[in-house]
Image (tube, rainbow, N blue to C red; front, side, top):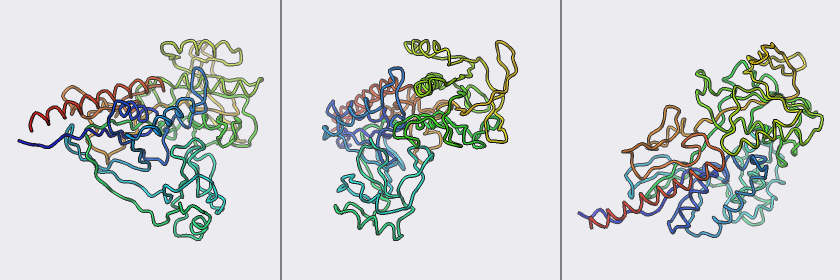
Length: 430
């Protein structure tokens, strides 16, 4: 019986830090890799961070090195604005159907920016979580890979689209670009589909959406970022004034049977980082961190010690009951101190909800055959599962950046082993 040679190409689904790591690790061992990302650029959530903890360096430190590895490796093919529609088969012989959305910009783009100047239409900036707007012809962000503009679908078939096309002297604007569907033959698949923040509007007592001065932890990252909506200044969204009295509420929707029953591991550390952001900008600022338990795993305990040594950062053991909104829009955090039993109602310039991590794959119903999932939707392969499928990074559970990189390296090895085994079996059958 001759089944033909097994495919040795590895598909990585998701272009965040885990997907990028898995792709370069597999490719540098000699395997062909296709890296799919559904947004216009690689980098995922990490690319939108202001800084990493505990060293507080910019994400470009890690991402640019990996982008260079991708550029220099001909075995890696990157496809953005792409999503898996279906998958069937077995290790060494998967058939994957992929759908791509139109970018309306082709490979001739030099990222010169002339197209952006040709239109006055502004659209919501998804990279800044909708906190500002960008031109309808835009670069996803300053560190985007690939460095190619995108034309927003809102202007297609309008005079502005024609103006954008006319402004491009390289012929890079393709207004006839359409969705496409194509088939891939793959030997192994690594799901690096990442995470999304829990929906803060579901936590009704915390009044997210009722005041612009109540934001989530990802929005806080963009406020602190030099390329964010405020140029890196931590300001009250309501009036643009400095946010000098800040509340950070831990476990917002986490460790709660009504929302996410699990701990997302990194939220406490992320809020400590946010406290550092505020204190770096304002020497007279006061930051209150409301917590159930502080969880600073392994060596990151030192970061906790550093932050807690600041006399203007207060750790308050309490899970606030609710957030009220005063007549002028000022948020007031209300609850009871677990230790002192004090009942408090404290007003703040800014309230930041530390939302937990929810797996993106949880709602990805049109990408079946990902493998086994745990009770919370994370992709966790079990003994007896199809050996050609693995998960990397937060697709498999809450992890910080360094742990995601380690997980991705392990996933690359698992994919390589599955491909080698399928190849050996295919050869034995010939």
